[in-house]
Length: 315
Ligand SMILES: [Zn+2]
Image (cartoon, rainbow, N blue to C red):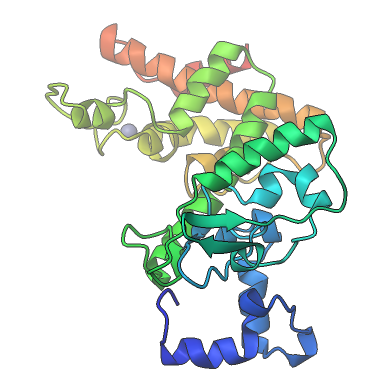
């Protein structure tokens, strides 16, 4: 994909070289495989993960599109200067088409629909300055760079891991949006947030940070390692607390793959979103009460008591 002259590249380019020729091949001439590929890669076009993951090193042919492709910095010019883009007569043209090599280097020949207003001139000057920082290299080949890998070479593995991160961060964002809307004290929500992202001083995390520990076993059940996942969800003690909640509201239980999942699934479909905000606030209160109880057991010789946690969370 990234180097010139590959056989596969020649075959695909001969049919699909939309970059160089700036032609959008009509969908009826595309194979199903290519359609799927473009669907995945162009999802949302500018917002697509794939578009953001590729960049160009500008060489002698300069075939990347001036406005639309990512060849200068982390944002394409179209997104950085939408106003100027709308005035440009060079939309869709390649970098090579809007400038020439001269003795002193590259000279830009940008074309506009009309003269720019004063404020647009300032914007144009900023863009020209940015263009002047772009390194065009007369003696090397154009090269596509893949940002998912340090060497800039595409691999399915790196794409998968990039996509996985992309989806994870989107899902986490959804969780936190819900959390900040939950009806609970800000302090309770902040503690819950720290638990959900596992930035929390449970015994496993303390041990990982080099805090001397006599044991990393759960302080409540003393059976398994005390991770956040264990302490707030999988521990037999936590299970008793959650079971009481389910009985209280009359549901069978919540899918508990992990803490974030448990939180997301802790809502009742027949309730309004406002009532569910109260309900998610209750989830946060439970988690906080388990943590307070942990402190009582560890530092004040308390005895684990799931009823007490449930009652405190209802307050
Ligand atoms: Zn336990």
